[in-house]
Length: 311
Image (cartoon, rainbow, N blue to C red; front, side, top):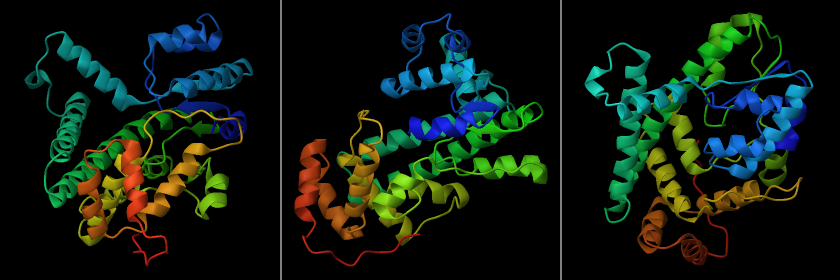
């Protein structure tokens, strides 16, 4: 991704990262902190990506492009953790405050996630589907709040910068709406899908959206989205959750193994009916990733079957 994103970053005055302000970030950009030291001081989910990002961002900073971290939701969440570590209690968080809003959102999100984890090992398939749909709604609501809080901060930055690159994960579909609503017609907010050329080459679509992603995105704009369409997306998502790789993948520049794998999984999922997913889930729910994928591939017929259209 980074070789495709860097030229876009270089064409802007400011790069806004989708991460909270972290200790040593400014020092890392300026070179007084080694990148290794910065990475050790802050936990990153994908260390290889984080390292290469730091190298790119340091170069941009050296060339006069401003770089900032803007993720108010996660910053407030960190402050809540510190508050509890210091002996604070939930009832001490005042109603009507940002902290209360973030606390309640995160509490609902975590509870829904745990409910999904609790049901997945043994509950009836339809119960597991319902739990995943409930989590998708909470995940979407959490994303909407994150987008609103980010937009409020980013709008302030437009007073000093004319061209701004805003990093955002593809599930943050309401960020554009939030920004445009605050900026009005004086600023153009233009989404750029970094991997669109790759996705179009692989599957003819602008983006590779797996069933779980589509479920969350629908819920972001339509919180009451339900019925057979939601059930099918959730059912297919449950199968893919068992077989998609979880670890970070590194590869030579110009290759895209993660996206290629997503396209492969999407093609598998689109050939599964709801009943197929229910049958498969009973076979793979306790299997490891490799075994589960083998079982799924063995189940799907060799000849293409009629697929459902889910929008």
